[in-house]
Image: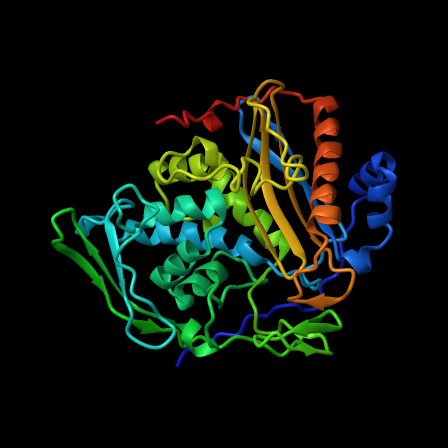
Length: 409
């Protein structure tokens, strides 16, 4: 058995930079001021990443922090789908020689409790499941089933070993988004890849992770929660064995995906240019622009997964702005990591943030202040940083053409 302990939540100091603190407090509305004055209640964290290009258009990054600490727990929710989707594409690289690619049909075969058979995908034009289609759905609408299938394909052990190898020490991804025991989450089903003639190309045998995780630091949130039987339990909810994705790790993963040449080689995913273009398209495409699958845009409006700037009020996003991001929401926590590009004004920057909006302190009661507090918080902080970026002087105007995408293709 491999003994692998993650040194999570050691004595991590909270980081705050005066530039970001002063910028937000000076420009904040009374609504935002109220939130900023209660960092313990709202558990908010923000990272603003300034990007400056040199004469060769090489990006250089400067992070500014506001109440950021790996020791301040936030539930990462669907943001864990970002590294899992990227690791699935990375794993596909090793199967290219067997004729398997993003569009190859992927059949999942249950081999034990907590697993399901998946041989069709009614959301795909082909009617068949594939890695590529799952990745699309993860970024377009944050689909849970798509994440579950990719989590099983990559496997709990590979996910965590690879992220640890890349230096993400404050990350632990150990759960699917479906009712499962801890043991069931360790195990992956059998998976088959077949070509268009149903000829078997590759079989992945069922496997179980033998990694051991450090759960010595107890993590509890709130003062009560509803259990699986909808009964109120009058004590904090225990998140000790849940997924963890520290905000700094999330920001660094996004930066690695979007600017691979600008991060150390050890922190780069093993992808080719086609993989990167595929990711960029669906990280920034809107549900209304997608034809496979087609979405009901009344439910999946364009800003459905875009928190900074736009989510509050479901605003339309100007055509000259694109947001490459991954957001998540669960248990009263809202989190988003975004690279924001304004092609008209030649502006680019990154924003990563999280907030907790649960005034009654009860979890699983579906009474979270997402609309009243959470989304407006992201909208206003995004607008303040964007206005600052519009006025910020740059030595060199960035060439942002690598991030222009023809979404009609």
